[in-house]
Amino acid sequence: MAERELTVSGSSWHGSNWHGGAAAVATLTFDVDAETPILAQGRGYAGHMSTMSHQSYGPDVGVPRILEMLDELEVPATFFVPGWVAEQRPGLAASIVERGHEVAHHSYSHRAPTSLTPKEERADFERALAVFAEQGVEISGYRAALWEASWLTPELVAEHGLLYDSSLMADDRPYRLATESGQEIVELPVHWSLDDWEQYAFLPAPQVGSVITAPSTVLAMWRDELDAMRRYRCLFNLCVHPFLSGRPGRIVALRSLIEFALDRGDVRFSRCRDVAAAAMADPELATRRPRPPNVDPSVFPEHP
Image (cartoon, rainbow, N blue to C red; front, side, top):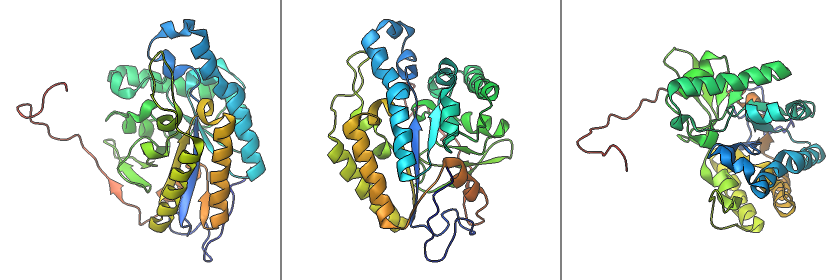
């Protein structure tokens, strides 16, 4: 599937700005976590058959349903897949790429980088890359598990030749991120308000969430955010999970959101790698050099 072309005010995607003249750029991203978020909390949960079935619904039912919807609406998307999931389901990543979508790096084990030592984070990062290399899947970008990037994370992304990260929240437009090595990557920022996990996720064990929100409420919230982002020319970086939003009432709401955006006529849908490439080529895009805050131990406690 080629990127859906929407021309706005005579401007094309290949202009000098990352947005190509669109009022907002929408990236539909699907985190195909499957069982990994639960197993990352303890491998003993592998013995919980009901919980494992809840998670396997994502790749087994949700992903095919989502791919069919994207085909019908002719919009591209990016699927962030943990290496473990791609390894356990060898044809999954290829089936996504074959439909014209992007597969991106989402760790190997879905353990948050902030919970790992630098050596462990590197090993997890590289193990996933090895899985995708073996399967012949080209990887351009990365998203940290739980969006909990460490200060090492951008260095790993740059060191391994990836174009972008999508884990941070310092803006609602893309920006270039400088790394200690001197290499720059593109950051495609995220936010909890555009994540279906906060709206739909619920499990009794391990305890996840407490309220399951109606899809109509979520749709209204995301429509409002998209309209506001059109005013400010933002990146509408939506993150949904096939084991959550692949369910019937929720995917119907997601479809309505995409149709709403298409009807606006000034929203461009694109894969993350294409937005990142346009952002890297934009001479007006800012470069940020974030550093850890200087923390006075006499003021701030070691642990909350």
